[in-house]
Length: 250
Figure 1 (spheres, rainbow, N blue to C red):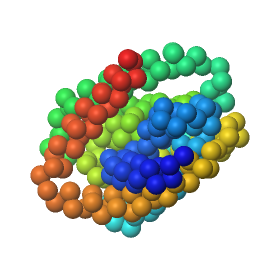
Figure 2: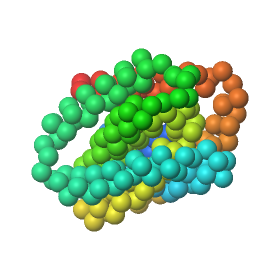
Figure 3: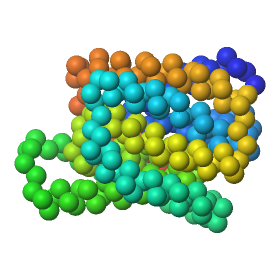
Figure 4: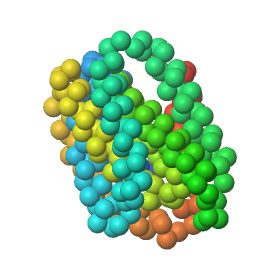
């Protein structure tokens, strides 16, 4: 395998997925299977192992900047972690075609919801609305956990959507998403390493490149937060999620 190419791919993906609150395991999964011909089980294990160090690095830097809302993140982890475990245990019994369609439809719905949803300028939220938002976000935590457990994805797409629904804005949402994904990915990695073989010849170059990307992303987020681009972030992520969903259905 081309070590330099893998390193560059890891750098690019690591920068952008940490910047936008994802883990990138699904992207690595596609690259490892589509471009480098790894078996699905090996690619799933390798992608999660690749993602974890960069997620930890990015999360630590976001934490140092004070951008992570740990209270909200912990609320989501309450449902996400058990879902990772359940998903890992049942992954061998779910037909891939059914799972692919389900995830595709979920991503499309989430993406359209984020694109169309207006940012509320009213800080006052009644208890009923807040409770409803928490239930929805916890549901997305379950979906994100299942994505990690069943398919070796990072689950970042539905996690960040849930965090936006809880009222987090821009890079606070992406930073908190990275925080949630660290714990989800760590649990998923343990299960997938046990069930699949990690290809270190592909994983290490990707991992090193992604680590450098994870160091760049938090600094880049501080600069972008001072520009007008911040108001386009939520609808842009919504469009991206919808496109991912459509692509998975094709």
